Length: 517
Image: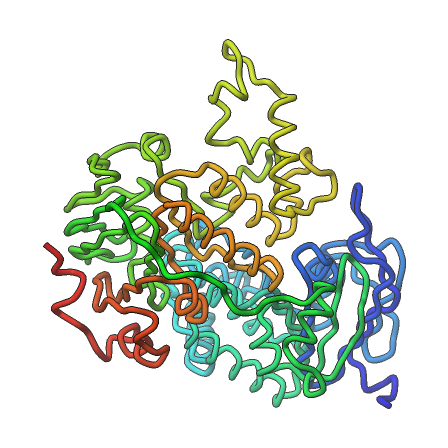
């Protein structure tokens, strides 16, 4: 048995309540020196809340925190930083209009005689980038970089402060398979250096690959702590969800019909550099099929989707939806024409965070006759509809339909967007990272819903960085590299390794999807 002083951090009998919900109910978590300790649980199980208590963002109603056996009081993140605790948040705490470098050094600036020593700081950050293989453009504005890049900025912020206890809240949710492998290696390196890591994730493969022990939470309670080597993925998923979970996708052969989305020679400019982010891309998506755009983050997928949905202007080519040209239509006109969109950035493009859950669920449909009469919103009908979606998609929130979107867990925010977009039953559903930040139970449910939408006859354009998801959910795979489609694949006739070669630019098929007539 470990002695008390083997634990660098102990969270003992922590209880944290919010209106209508006990997020943490008498939870005890003990972190050993130099270990990678995974925290596993469904969306809304209380994982992020527990880590926010440790980081000083929340104050618990009950319980104590010890560091090296001594009781400590963490009133705010400054106290946590002083104790050597750093956190990479699930929803990044970055200033969009600042540069990457400014974000990394913010609050820990190097000064001399009261003057900011930016050159010195830039050298230090560049050295960290080099040491840990975290490539970022230090001069770029945060609002112009991809979500995957923002993740790296958050990790560099923590490394720059030289913390000894590192909290990673869903760190791999937006990373590519290669980036995930790199991050796992970095985490192992941290542990070898003597740093102690708390690692929140929904991904069982990662837990099995990198963690020493796992603590499982369910509905705010601690189910138990186990040695990773002593359990299987299936046992962990059962502990987490409380029932057996189907880890494989069950689907019939696709029966594609008419072309729904027709993209020809599409060009979308980049916000980061003078080159175009999307360069002459052509492809079709037919009714009753799931076409997946696969690729390493930052190869034009985001701009491609923004071009199709109207979030970014296109400078060349055409987009047709059910035979109708929508190349220069407004976002609203595209939505009204039959486009549903589960966006990559749920906060920026998916939700009005200050609005209630029910308001967010009718964002595109409040003009429907069902929800308004003579210009007045029928609030009773909105509530009824919201309650129905919350129940059907198992969206968990403290106060039901009136819960503020901002206060919900990331996974439940995602489920709310998916509920809204799938329920619209449009001819085209564009789903970008639809299972990002979701637990295995929710992923099983969302995958089943996407397959059901396909079988209903919807055309589904899926953009995913998860190779497992790409391989098991797609009917066709298009690989994007440096703004072009470099290959088209049948998932039954290819391998993850082959896809990886095309994703990294090592191979390309110049007679492929880009040259469609």
